[in-house]
Amino acid sequence: MPEMHGPLNPALAATFPPPVMEARRWIANASFPADRPLLNLSQAAPADPPPEPLRQAMAEIVLSDPATHLYGPVLGLPELRAKVAADWSAAYGGTVRADQVAITSGCNQAFTAALATLAGKGDNVILPLPFYFNHKMWLDMEGIEARYLETGDDLLPDPEACAALIDDRTRAIVLVTPNNPGGVEYPADLVAAFRDLARSRGLALIVDETYRDFDAREGAPHDLFADPDWDEVLIQLYSFSKAYRLTGHRVGAICSSPERLAQVEKWLDTVAICPNGLGQRAALWGMENLGDWLAGERREILARRAAMDAGFAALPDWRALGCGAYFAYVAHPFDAPSDVVAKALVDRASLLLLPGTMFGPTREQGGSGRAEATLRIAYANADLQGIATLFDRLRDVTARGL
Image (cartoon, rainbow, N blue to C red):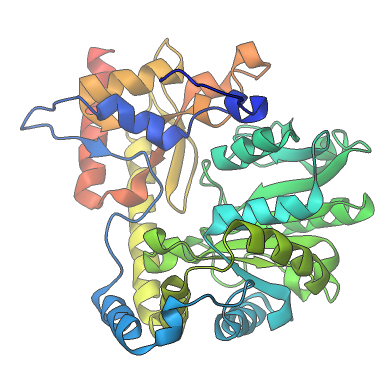
């Protein structure tokens, strides 16, 4: 790394590097055999552009809607906010109003904006393990303690264990469901128990539902929005990136109280002024026109999930702790820490996976040891043939060893 001249924020300096970018450096100068090309299952993002009808609509928007190219409302297009409110009310069996929705430049920004209203240096926020690394990175940058909530082999957090972590500097509990990196879908009664805990202790419950469109369950995954006072405790986050392949256009959402969103508006105006105009209009067009297409995308992801479940059932040396949405979180069979294993898999199997050390503390950092024993596989980036190739390579490298 080049030498730094001048002052440097110590909190930022102490934050670990972006994991996906770090993994890309492992393959930057690598070469792979012609008969074993790289299978990149590291990043949880669609590998394809938006479907052609959406791209055509986006082209027309660029050409015909001058407002697309101008500053817009800080909290997002009124039409998109209203559409999210209406669709969420129907999907969750509750009431969400447009003034309880804000649009952001991606779901990561939704998280950072929400945290900006909740916590400052010296406060703490509870994160179940394994965590989503960008959540941890933001807390570290802001000087907010990430208080770890250990989970069992099912990767589900326990509200009673969470309660024992709360003190007078705790500001929020964060849940991600379906989970990144674990893939597990939190049962509705578990999410409700965390809501009740947060309410009883005067905390916010942040529920990141980036992958809600790929939940295997039919119907609403929880009933939090059916609570008439939901916005007193719940802050829900969402991303349009996965549903409509809009990753490069950065569109996310926050659902919370109008009073909190007034504070969010200050932060967003300072950071980005307004969300991406084209991305917002594309998200709205997708919501209005791509329901059947998105249902097909969900079916395809569920088929890949079934292939992952079958593959691990036939590979007893590996153990899937969680599998769902875009991810499998698995225990590897090697006598080496996961960061060493992940790098070795690049060379030995032309596989790029992320190690558990990117999603939780190591033993040296006070962790339980799960981080060293696990890997995340972003299988949504592989078709069924790619998943078959994954298991062929895992089977081969397990037999040969690292």
